[in-house]
Amino acid sequence: MIATIPVTPARAMSLIGRGVFIELLRRKDAYVLLVLVGLHALAVLTVSIVGVQNPATGTFLLNLGLTLTHFASHLLVMLLAVRQIPAEIDGRTLYPLLAKPIERRTFLLGKWSACTACGAGALLLMVVLVWVPAPKLEAYSLGLLAQALALQTVSLGLVAAVSLLLSLLVPRGVALVAVCLTVFLGDKVASLSAAQAADSPFERPLRWLLAYVPDFSKLDLFTRLTDGIAPLSVAAFTGLAAWGALCTAAALALSAHLFERRAL
Amino acid sequence: MKSSRVLLWLAFGLSPALVLALSPNAYQGGRSRSAADRNARNSSAIAVMLGEFRTSMSDLLFVKTERYLDSGIAYMPHIDDHLASVQAETAELAEHHHDAEHGHVEETGHVHGPDCDHGHDDGHADEAPHAEGEFAGTPTIIRTPEDDFRGFIGWLHREVKPWRDPRLGHEHTDGTELLPWYRMMTMADPHNIRGYAIGAWWLTDHSPEEAVRFASEGVENNPEAFQLHLILGRVLYAQANAILADTGAGQTQIAPIIDRAIASFRRGAELAIAQRPPGGYLDPGDSGWDESLEEDALASARMAVLLLENHGDLAEARRLASDYTQVFGVDYVLERHAAAPVSPEPHH
Image 1 (cartoon, one colour):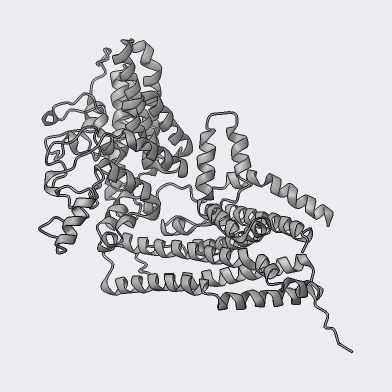
Image 2 (tube, rainbow over the protein chains, first blue to last red; image 1 turned 180 degrees about the vertical axis):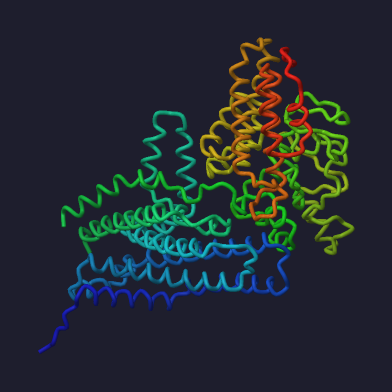
């Protein structure tokens, strides 16, 4: 007689998350990005020892490092999330998992939370790598730093959700390019498109429509931080976090809908 | 379950209302936008090592336009506090140059006094190639043969890349090809104040109406940026002058445009006064208010006074000059107008 251990959704999610984490450690992406940020940290450390000529240059170096961190952590989550479901289908490892039985919805949620957690962990590590050696010759608001990190985490969750969604719709290469464009150029493209309809009756509807494409730049406060601007008001911060969470929930709901109806 | 789904999609459907109202990165000032900080960054060895990335990652389009302007030649950063101001960058708009030695005022609001050490041609940009010696001595990114240790490789580098002997000064191109870049710059970042200001200035020569539209768009997107109110006033004034010159229209026909220009200058001056620290650019605090901002603030105040005076409202011009003098302290133009007797005849 074979004893069956009941798999609760929480346990299933934690096991799926463990799998994602092991995969992250086995692949080169995270190491390459960490080495890149590490090289920046080393260069900044060297410069700090030699001496930074003026506070503005110190701030510039910090901004460069934090921008690199934003870029690297988002890229890492994209690379990780976009291959999760296609790789499980291609490798036929999805079938024993779903036969456990694990609900498809739980599977998806486990993948999303693991990708987000890996991204948040990498972000934190990289921010420490950048922040510690950087010459801090000007004042930076620690409150705003906390807000920036919180919103970056929301942003990583959104990237993971959008990547999972797109990986269910198009081949993973195409999905990766599409997520990259949305994350790094989405706000620029939306702004350019809206400007085409400036002063026309279509401007407002177009702006409204384009606002459904997530604007990741709104969740990036690093330049605001290095610019020496005050933290966001509680209302603005909560609004941004709520908007990010709402978009993430919508992307996950759509992914779950598509995944549940997908013939495997 | 179903109701929570409906709620989710309903909330998502309304989410643009929330996100369009939130702009955490739209703020006035900031170190990355400060001319003084930019100069400090540009003068550091790190900035030189980083080459193209020397100003900031978001400023790349501006670097691109700078290169276009200098006929593709890459120069070391050379824009000082004075040249960084909207006032100085657009100084070439002035149509009526007065004798600098007599301390006359140009249309730009800039005063050339006896101690003024820059001429009319020191704006960074110009329409026609400059005379030999303009910005002469500004080193190029690619070294001169005398300084270049690379020998043949250095020669090859100078041959295949745009390069000009830095002793000969800059050769500036016509700005026409720059216009799409400014359009892209401001479309990509509607808070790029410098992009709007300089783009509007370039447009003035080609189409004053377009320039007014472009500057107005800048003001709409950045209502607190006093430099844009200054540039809007300037392009409106240029538009009025163009109408006078092209159509022979009378003063009454251009009066609405002049009134709008005056209102714009006044609004610019009011905003500048509200944002300016008590000591101006000499203020000891970390306000980020540098010489370029001070120059733009003064230009807004002077232009408001001068246009009011030129168009007949002498009492109001005098009152404004007196108010502004109290804020800005010693200023030749404002003091002169504050003390001027009110005469019933407007002078043009």
